[in-house]
Image 1 (cartoon, one colour):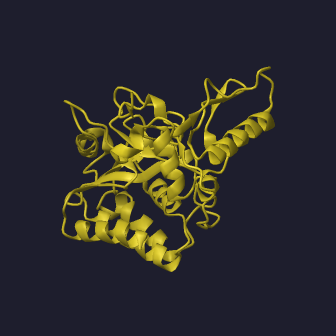
Image 2 (cartoon, rainbow, N blue to C red):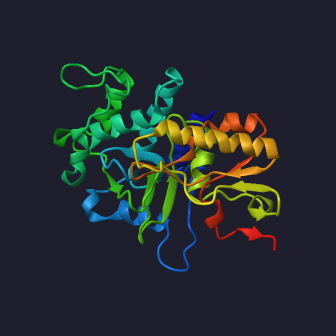
Image 3 (cartoon, rainbow, N blue to C red):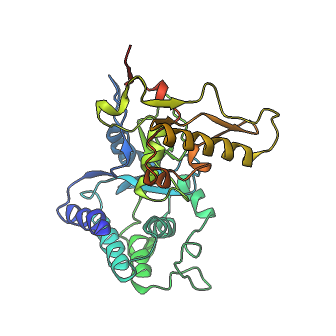
Length: 310
C-alpha cells in the first residue's frame, strides 16, 4: 500500500506531465518569515545548468552520508523528460514483484547507474546495489531484466541520440535527514529519521519529540502541579567512568518511582563519556508505556510551547 501511494501516484503525475514535489509525512517544515521554501530550492536545482541538459528531477542527500540519496523528498520535472515516468513505472513493477525489497536502496542503485554528469559522479564510488540485495553480473550490469532495460533507456549513450536522463542532488544541509540532525541557517526542512531500535513509526515519534518537532495538543505541554517527576540535574556517572550499566540502573529506578507515585516521568538529560545519550538507548519506551508509565522527552522543559501552572 505504501509503495502504491508513493510510486503509483508519482507515475500517474509523470504520465500527465505534471511537475510535483514529493515529501513523506515525517518531514518537518520550519516556518520562515521570508526567503525561499524547500520547494523553491528543489525546483531551482532541477533547472540549473550544472544538472546537465534538460534535467528531469532533483533529489536530496542525507546529512550524515552524502553518498546516499534520501527518497523522503524529491522534485520531478516530468514535462522536461518523459523518462521520469519510466523510472517510477519500473520501480513500482520491481517492488510489486519483490515486496520486501528496500525501496531506498533500489532508487539509489538505479540512479547511481544512470548518473552521467561529472558534478555528481562521486556518489557512484559507493555502489549499494549488492549490499541492498540487487544482484549484478561481472560487468556491473543489473541481473533483473526490467531494471537493466531502464538503465539502458535512461543512459543510452551518444550513439542513440536521445541523451541521458539527467538529474541533480540537493545538499543535505537544506533538508536535514539524520537521527540527530545539525540545523543551519540554510536548513529548510528536517526529515525525521531513525534506525534500530527505533525503526518503527513509534520510533520516529520518539525522535521527533526529542528534536521538539512533535506537534501534539496543548495538554501534552501543560505542566500541572503534582503530575510530573523530574531529576534535578543531569544523569551521569559521578566518576566520569565508562559505566553504562550505572546509568541504565539509575534510569530504571526513576521509571519505577514514576510508576509507584503515578507521575509522568520527564526523561533526564543523560551523558556517557562526554556524549549525550538519548533515553531510548537506555530504556525501551514502548514497554514503559505498556507498564502504564507516562513519559516526556528530555527536551520537554525547554519546549517554547510549555505552559506551567503557578
